[in-house]
Amino acid sequence: MTMPKTVRHINEIRTLEALLKHGPMSRADIARTLDVTRATASSLVSSLVEGGFLFEDSDSGEERPNRTGRPSTRVALKPQHAIFLGAYMTVGRITLAAVDLVANVIAVDVMDYEPRLADAAHVAKLMAARIKTFIARLPSPDRINGLNIAVPGLVDLEGTIIRAPMLGWKDISFRPLIQAALPEIEVSVLDNDANAFAFEELYLGKRSELREAIYVFIDDGVGGCLVCNGEILRGFNGYAGEIGHIIVGEEGYFSPTAVKGTLESFVARQAVLARYRSLGGSAASISDFIKDLNEGSEAARATLKDWSYYLGRGIATLTSMLNPECIILGGAVARLYPLSEQDVLKSMRDHLMPKSKEPQIKRSNMGVEAPAIGAARMLHRDFFMGGPDKGGAKSSAEE
Image 1 (cartoon, one colour):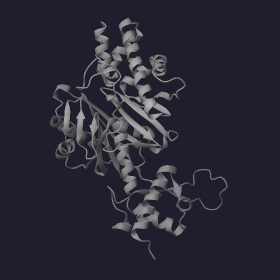
Image 2: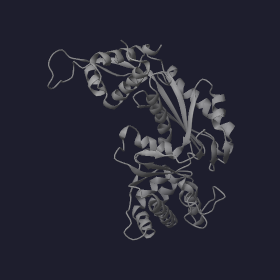
Image 3: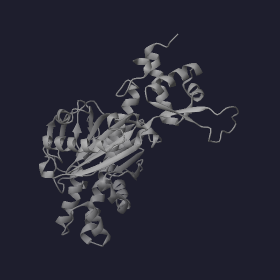
Image 4: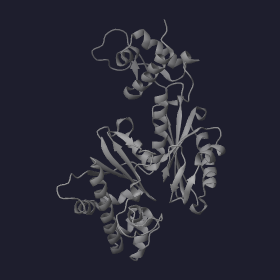
């Protein structure tokens, strides 16, 4: 008697998840992990091998403590069976990433473009052309399982970019634009860059100890992601985490939106560079600013002091509202935090009530490509949630 189709599908998903989590396993190990019979485990493995999801690998060359008898044959995920793409677009730059079936990053690509030409249709064409070149260099370009895109702005649950001030975009249906320019690849999801950044940190248990946290992504703007009970908090319309727009002062150093005094108007990239110019310095990038700081520029030191004050003030506001266990800083501008940690902590404490519970503040060790990789791994997660019939070849049991 065969298993009902739905039960078999669920068990195939569980098999793939077990191999993703534990690595190569024997059929007996799979049976124990899934709490099914060995015959059922063998049937599941056979259909997944036939569908191309798994391959068989003898463990005879490895030490096998406490085991006797013939060496067992293990099965493992076949990395090249599927490729998941992620893209991150920001002002003047498009970053691409590809991950395989075991969630390993197999390629990253960065393209700079002229920011003045950043209308949505133009960026969609640039991104599509770059993706076509990118996938042509991948080991299995015929195994692409879709594309997720991270953007520096507010995205609704339908994928419309409600606003992306740094790009100058408002109410842009970007998915149809990129889909029209890239018809051969399904464009799955658009998401906020901070959510993608946080997902990259959280996926596959890399920060499994965190249950209540705030991710702050500081680049051209300031994005935020709220983690509640270990899950990303989306909010009613998917807008949760817009912490770059909390008010921390009267007038910032630059104005990305009509709202004055926002956190990002004090601590984002252009705010740092504008404040530095107002004090007599000049830097084209955060790297140049750090170089001047290390060379003893007084204007750079004063700028960093101001940045620390307003970042600490913003963190204090978030702490009072949400009581996070940890606040993790990422993005290019977060490189300033190790240079000003004590000033940020002092400002946070000065803006908190006495005896408040302080969060840990950590800087992420991920690079600026993290949102692109996070977007790709979101797609990888969705594939495993959907199982073998989502985006890849179906197993023989379902054909």
